[in-house]
Length: 584
Image 1 (spheres, helix red, strand yellow):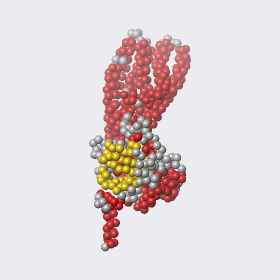
Image 2 (image 1 turned 30 degrees about the vertical axis):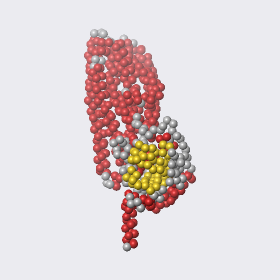
Image 3 (image 1 turned 120 degrees about the vertical axis):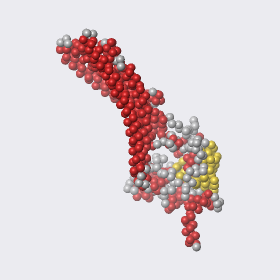
Image 4 (image 1 turned 60 degrees about the vertical axis):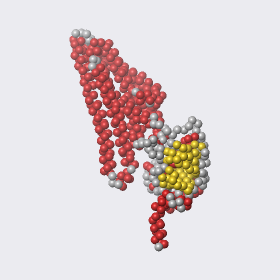
């Protein structure tokens, strides 16, 4: 029950729906137990005594009871569903909100398909127990206790003889719960992996087809699907083993009832109608106990789902704001790194080590180096996607930790190498970071990013709706829209993470030309693999293994005979050969 206690804040505010449902369930259960009593009265007082004139009144009374039961059942079920669906509405919103604020470090290890499974199948499993499982448990206790009281009223001795197998049934139910809960948790985990497999395959379908790996993906899915099947079959084997045992113990009660009850009727200690009513009442106890396995099944599934939901809700948000953060509308953009060291995990080698540099407003800082040298890590520290282990990062002379996250990030325009576009219009994608932007501002941002011309060639121009992840546009077109999106926010700091890698040299030249005006009054950090993208920078930092090994302007570095010149020689060696051939 610990899981339900931790999630109590999501369903307890709606306890009025729960208690309303339970009150009407009490009426429904009470009316249900009246049926055998009416049957007993009909047999003993009407049929055996020949009072047939009572039959119309009993029939009308029975119809009235049925009508009342129908109304109370409706209210019970509706308020029960209202309790469940309203509770998980808040829970699902809170889970989604939590995912928005969890740090990059969490997503480094999380699987998209598994997270989707938690927000859909696990939430629904928890909802179903709130709507149905709680009431079934209460129905069980009410029906069993009321039926037991009526049976005890008819014959205490027959009651104890009939229910003598209940302790053994309780032991079987307990063992069933202990076995089935971990099995259902395994099912949930396997289902999450299955979802991840499907999600990754659909997202990477172009890669799959281009490399003719369809058969590999099919086999991989078959393996995940097979694991899910085996987990489910294992759970079914537990159910199949315990349910017949519980049914057997229930039928033992029926045999005891017929044997001893028949004896009591023959010696006059029990009336025939009471035996018939007793037979109906004992099933009101047997069936709930036999169905207790199903209810425990629901409970186990919801508990396993609740544990997986708590893993998200209790995940650590290691990027925290201070108690009274600084809120600013506009930063100057003066960046300073002071001996910054970063490790993504305790066991990892340092991604950055003792990095120090300054970037003043209106200046362009270029970052170049091999893959994994620490270029992107620098930009992710500026935006507080990660926290440094040592050192300080200052913006306008203030530690970035002192700013509110919203103030910090709205002043930074970020263009990633892999541009993500939403399934919406081009206009909505460009204005995503600044929804209040006018159409003129959106068009101006698109023109600066060299995107306006191809946008106007599309059937609906800026109202063209894109497919998932920008499907329908080339890589270069998506990248230019992403650049326009960053420009549209009018940031104080502009970060371009290999932002022109997917465009041709001519388009890159035009974008850089347009960027000169954009960069004039803001700090710009450019990550690039091509020297042509950053040779105009005011300072170029060359990184190797997380350290700055060389710094300076392009002309200085070209005469320094260091790593930068070696990169230049590698990139332009073909051009050098052509020039040497022409000169020779």
